[in-house]
Image (cartoon, rainbow, N blue to C red; front, side, top):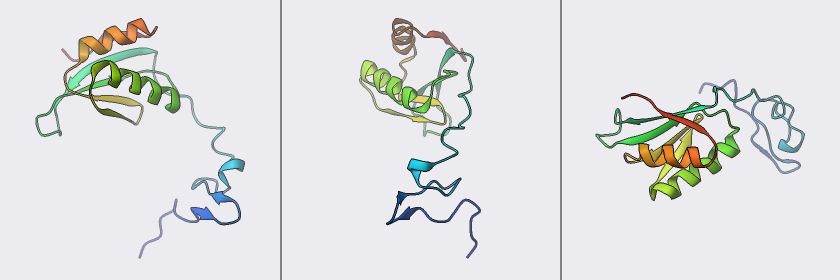
Amino acid sequence: MKRSSTGGLVYSTESGRMCPVCRQALAQCQCKSSAPAPAGDGVARVSRETKGRGGKSVTLVRGLALDPVALGVLGKQLRTACGSGGTVKDGVIEVQGDHCDRIIDTLTKSGHRAKRAGG
């Protein structure tokens, strides 16, 4: 069996959950504070995509320079406004269904610059 370079101790009964990168307890994690700034120019690009989803359309929001927690909160607000499901993956908010216009309206009301991307 091959050992992964990022594998190792995940939980310790002494200190609880362990960081896989710096191998310290999460309370004393060194790499958490040096996380890179989120990429993006502050303009939310809203597009609709169907590739790789069995023909189902998904509305994507890219380009927001927010930390993962704030992005999750914004994703929850957008899903609630659309009355649909979705997720946040790799800095991209995915909302199930074609809700581009509604998402752009919600983003502009919450103070973000948003524009339609991809036709």
